[in-house]
Image 1 (spheres, rainbow, N blue to C red):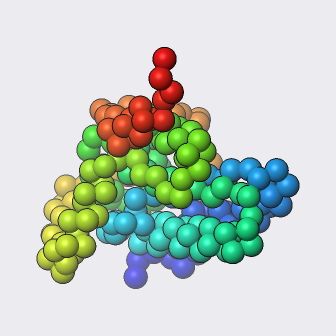
Image 2: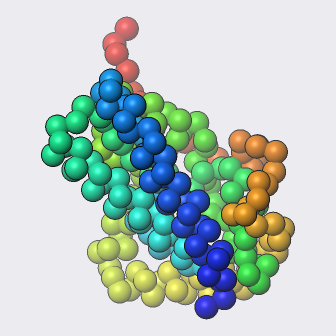
Length: 209
């Protein structure tokens, strides 16, 4: 109700249509040499994020697009490897630049993963030519838990949303969906953690000495 239609559409354009447009441009070049393409999605395609419906919907769209395109490439016997890497929360300045209609942001997700974990996952996706990789095993478990206890899980998310709205912080008021924001910082500076799932895959891929 509260999100202007143009803001909702802008989020979908930035988070989903940009993926489609990029793939449309690079695919012919990759097909010429059986290259690899890694698309960055989000675990928001697995778990709904209250107050971020446009973002969540666009990440569902990215997953559906990539999964469908992969089947189409296989049907055409293409040599292109298409991978989808879906991170959980990552320590970037994302949260500092989220636009909010009422100026109130929900509390940031604690203990995000470091950007290096995403880079390692991308490298591994190319090396293994894997269909899908996740950064953050905790989010995989959270998705499984939600599906196994629905509709109770959705009710719990609704309650958490109510708590978050009462304890949220005031946002900066900047809408990064329309204009560049910040100076290209890599990290926001939150307390990070490693993804055991990513590191475990990396160790399995490492050749013996």
